[in-house]
Length: 501
Image 1 (cartoon, rainbow, N blue to C red):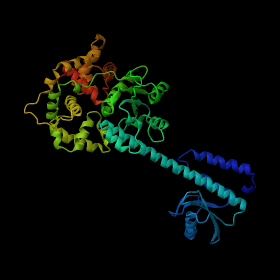
Image 2: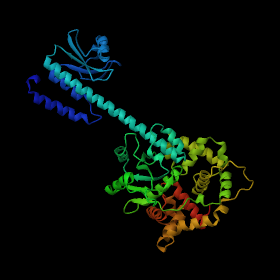
Image 3: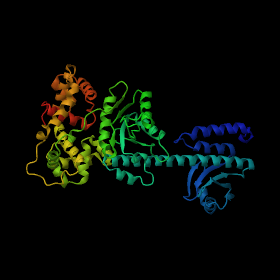
Image 4: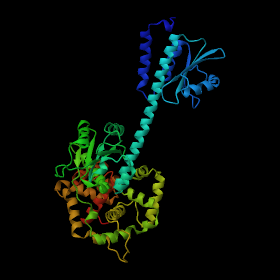
């Protein structure tokens, strides 16, 4: 058999570089295959040792850690940079130690062989040890980078949650020293990109700036829907037209949709920063429309929320009477109840980082206190409207309650509310859409259960779902995944006399 050291240097270099190439760009690849190359070339066992921790980070299969017991004093000197290399005898073995890297504490390359290494072999071992240390350090850097990316994502999520709660000042406090450009603007639009779960992180990182933000925007991987990338983009309205920007991050998102037939994009109207929650809901509704349109991009063109059209004094008094029992419950219970009006229970659990059982327990307490069946879609619509009024008017619950507050039916009989209901259902008044309108009434009567609605209508569940998709497109509302769209439908049907609360 040919002695490996007698092979031409080019042959050995080619083999070594091939091994490095197989592992350098694979985060999970085992570096041991590079280390095992040295025993074949030199007849020596090798290890990379963390002298501070006295642990072996990487070694060949024949390396015995017992040899380290005899090396502790010298390992300490190499680790702290007092010496660069050393050679020792440990029993019948020849041990060579060499500090690798430049940062303190330094790692140590340990070679154990039955005979002293030639100068040529020692140089080869030293170079290989340096490569191993560099690869190890690169992986450590990758690990830290992933940690940084996770922390940056968590900070962006915190900013989004603060804006969703209507508190831009809190968002600024969370970003002291690195306030994103978004928070320097007066208004924003929310874009929701529907894409593959694995694509979200790639898109997020591809357009991230050194501060962890995205220029004058903010991309956040939605904690509820794995296929949603939530993008908050500053609305500077440079020409005063009120039109959506067609450059920057907004243009990037449109290009992504154009290039990928599985993507879709929903865009909200322009809102002040404290109204981010409303903008987010609009973007969700627009996304439902975009998913059913040819270009797969849709802006929100719906109406104002119903709570803005109710008579102010009466709405405040009514909402206070509905929500009053929540005042005696923990704040977390109220927050879980509010979120549950917009997201499924698992989604609420993921937003608040609690278990689904915890969410269920808090909703049970809220349900008992309110005297409402929160599994009934009409009760949920009533509660959602009351919570919407409370978000619009902070004085809800802070004034003395009257003995006989107005009923919701009384508030809905006002002219603005009635006009809102007619406008909401107007896209279905054409004779072509009467079956869709009929399906919506049956679906609400079946508590938004497509299977039960299908049985009542004498058709298939697929037909019901198809009609709901058509209704989403015509009404500009998300009906199949968002609570708020269904709540609006309940109120609109009630105003039309089709489905009483």
